[in-house]
Image 1 (cartoon, rainbow, N blue to C red):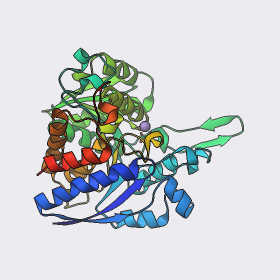
Image 2: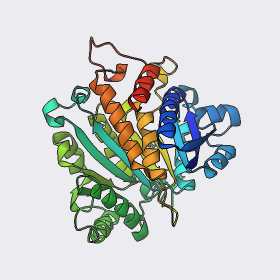
Image 3: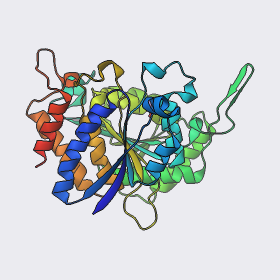
Image 4: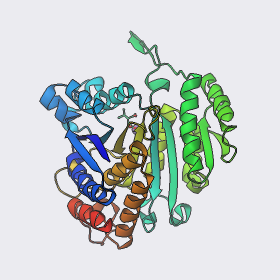
Length: 361
Ligand code: IPM
Ligand code: MN
């Protein structure tokens, strides 16, 4: 099999952790006899420096010619003074999502065995392992709804959801739940917002096609509270764009280190193909404070590469392999600085990448 990917390492720790994901990918290519052609392009701050724009046309073209986008992270103090819409985060991520119709955002919050101590919650709340998946709608709602403007002393954003937008993200969430713990909790604010009354109705209707998945509904404020009170009650959470933005940050903090968490943003699968075009990126940011020191945790980037095989190439066994390799390296006690406990020796970015690559063969 042959695949083509766009590699967009971006800023800060992006290039360092990307190098480790590529290293691990070489092992996957060998093991599964698949060739992945890499086309590298600038995105974010480095693209502003080199092309005057966080998402240059040439980068979009590279992505259009690929089966998937492997993304690092963008942003840093150097570009913080630019107007918000020109900054690396908004200037690159939001247009990429819209351009490629990446409506389904999957954000797993996983606490690996032995890492409960990295969570700010008490170990008894986390338990042995924790595995919650946040499914976030990514191209609708307040982020993109029109009208959106500023006029004198007034500013407007608009919350809009249409039936097809809710249906397609609900299907993704139900299908994900079906492959996991078969529990889906849909988040809304149906006690206040008309769009969210509609959201609950449509999700309930879609749910009739998934009788094997237990569907529940929860108001977003309660969900924010339940996530810290008892996160293990959740399997899959489904939320609209803005609520999903907030809850996925909360869920990932519960998991301890942002450096551990991958994510996938998927478009509708093209007819007749198993995989969906998507962008795969770590949940954490570019961490400019530790960039270039060789101490960043590459696990999120490596797991994101695994998610790319799972969702874009229809090879879920690759994700399982990568996940297993990460789990075994952690079980042997290896830790990068962000997940080590005081007094514990930690290893660097490259060493962690080497160990995970080794664990794969
Ligand atoms: C995220 C980020 C983005 C968002 C920002 C950078 C535009 O917070 O991916 O969650 O709000 O979606
Ligand atoms: Mn966010």
